[in-house]
Length: 249
Image 1: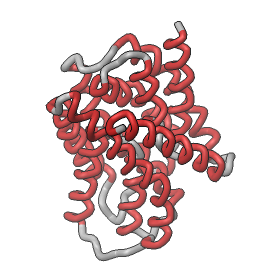
Image 2: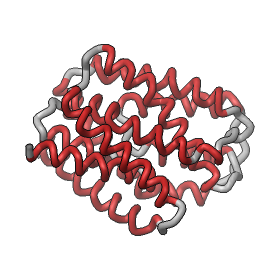
Image 3: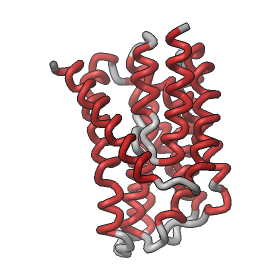
Image 4: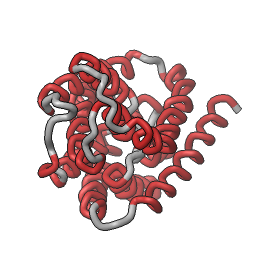
């Protein structure tokens, strides 16, 4: 019962974090592992459980959808889906022990994106030297990361898009939620079809994450994100450090 309450609380928090600042997997993945779910299964279960929250957030942001640097959202979504599927296959093919060794580094990459992504966005915002091919290739690689792990992939997408468009960053929030969801769609279908998820834990975590995602998206247009982002970053640093100690300590 204690594990169930942990999953419900982590789902609410993770869904809200994804809608407001990203990084929800920093909460859901450790919670699932604390509940006794093996690492690769926990990662797959986290992706599936957080998927409804991301989809709900994308619906809330639907009025802000549009092309990115002249590339239609349909093409961006298509390569995200294919990349997400490739990332999902990569996760399932990796042994548990190897994934545990890689996990701290994945968390570190996500933490760095949370810490410096916005600064990078501001510094490089509006560079116009990327063509359609480079944009779609970059989106495909981000899709692979999203399907394989996905931590802070929305921030990474925003940083990448800052290279290629002068659009206001707030306008990109809608496409961010849609394309993160697109990358996750093929991965979670693969995880579900291959039985790579802990269904009991997912059925507890997913409704809470959906509620958190909806509330977080509603609050996203009203609350200053600075405090939320700072708390998310502190949590990310602590979780990353804990996994480094666990893997290499």
